Amino acid sequence: MNEPNAMTFLGHVGELRKRIILVLAVVVIAMIAGLFLAPQILHYLKSMPPASDMVWNVFSPWDSAKIYMSVALAFSIVVSLPYILYQIWAFVKKGLRPVEQDAAFLYIPFAFISFIIGLSFSYFIVFPMSLAFTTSITKNLGFSETYGVYQYFSFMFNIILPVSLAFELPIIVMFLTKLGVLNPKRLNALRRHAYLILVITASLISPPEIISHLMVFVPLVLLYEISIVLSGVVYRRKNHKAFASG
Image 1 (tube, rainbow, N blue to C red):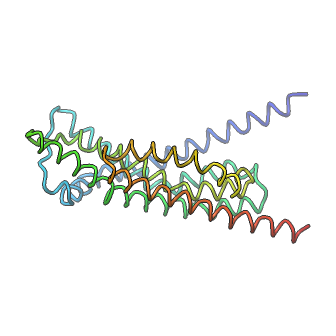
Image 2 (cartoon, rainbow, N blue to C red; image 1 turned 45 degrees about the horizontal axis):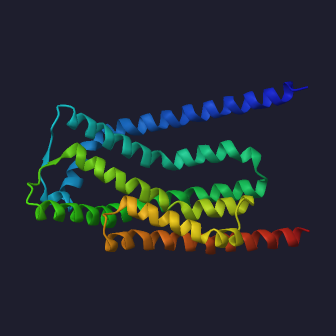
Image 3 (cartoon, rainbow, N blue to C red; image 1 turned 90 degrees about the vertical axis):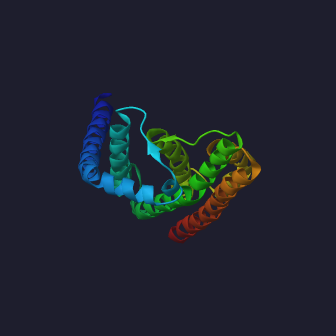
């Protein structure tokens, strides 16, 4: 009696395995391209402030190789992101109704655009602000500024990655509203808890002073409030269509 369910489960596992392999293949191909472009990307980043005023040092023979591979991998993930999102949609679409499948597919380009906006915001605003704060502490303490390139990029990635992912919040909320998991009423009820999480997030990814916290916290709050508004739009359209079809 359980054989059909077992076959269904094994079928899902097989399909997931196939899509993971396809994603890895695309990421690897994009990373090969990234290996050729990594020097140009590094030169561009070095020419842009705040890095343009610094001297990058290496403290280990492996530092250059680590950064070279990290930049190539980051490039491949960003370039492959639309295809990754498509494969996620293709895997889950069988559990969705046709209308939900179409709606979810339309979210893919918006998810990618939101990620790029978050990446730009975090790199051009949050990261320089954080680096300026830590540099001011270094100068006040009379320390000599000698930055290791690996430490510099680790610091940068730890800041821009969480902020970039946070910009996916409106798209995720719209998608979950479309599926009936979330609604504006529930999001309003969770506002206090959400703000607490956002405060903690802002304090973790920004320098430990109030101005920097606010510069990160305010955009995160705006993202949450925008998510509620967009959830309301999706929720009303969903109910209107259900009423019209009923």
